[in-house]
Length: 427
Image (cartoon, rainbow, N blue to C red):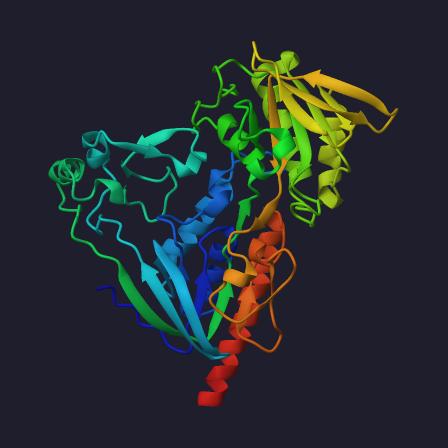
């Protein structure tokens, strides 16, 4: 049984992505006791799955490494992974939080040596590559995973594969008898930082995401470009592994649409502009990007980056929301059909690959949050000024990494104010 000591002075942060990590660290470094809860085996969230940030095109390891160092150095911050909040009751300054914690089947003795992964033959879909590749059923999520401990997929527990993993471990780290636990903890304030998920592209029927293998999403393309991704950084078509040098980037795939997501997801334009540069770096002058757009959202510090991409002769902009995507039967090339609104002429343009800039929606929508909260029509949470429950990052709105960090810092400060007031009341 996991022992977790928490009081009305504890700040609970739900979600271990960049927003949750930031909120937890800011509160802990201000002297507050913080419990950071993450439902997956590792911290980092979707930021850890990016190849590069925009606009500087630096790698996410820059920011994550600093945060991981701060977490390891903090005496006020505790981390629970594979834990999910199922219920929150109480009021400002006096919450009870119920957690369901799933077994990792690997204990603290793990040195991440990899012997269990080498011994196991069973493979599962790799969620960190959005299912574009397989990974061993005994795995380290990724190189920057925290905690730096392996995980056994439940599918091999109780099977010969699980026994192989246990036999291969020299440190007694494999514990196949771990069970799911239910924990109840106290908290003075709760920061909800559960992040975002990409909109289901299969719902956009005219684009054929679920029918045409060479139509993928922007988050999948991000993994293709990464040297640690499913293709080792080769930008290749899923259908045949052919190099994709002529790529269409379709904006607002599911966003700003009454049939899908009503809101603008904000990051999509910059994500696609960034990804055109991946293609340029990979194939030089042979690279051809076509950006189909309604409007380009690149304000403030992003405008210079947009101008740089505009000046790239290998990038073409077409002001249009494509009507549909078809597929050439012989080549499996996707063909984008629509009307260019600058000139009002029809087009049917063939590409090697189509990348849908899918919108972002909250991973846990307001209606599914285990507490009484107010949410907008898209499911984003609105923090109540009088309460002790605060949304941060993409749980509160569609935000990029920079604005998510700002939102998380604000959430931490508000939570600190709540527990400080509780301090005074108790005194």
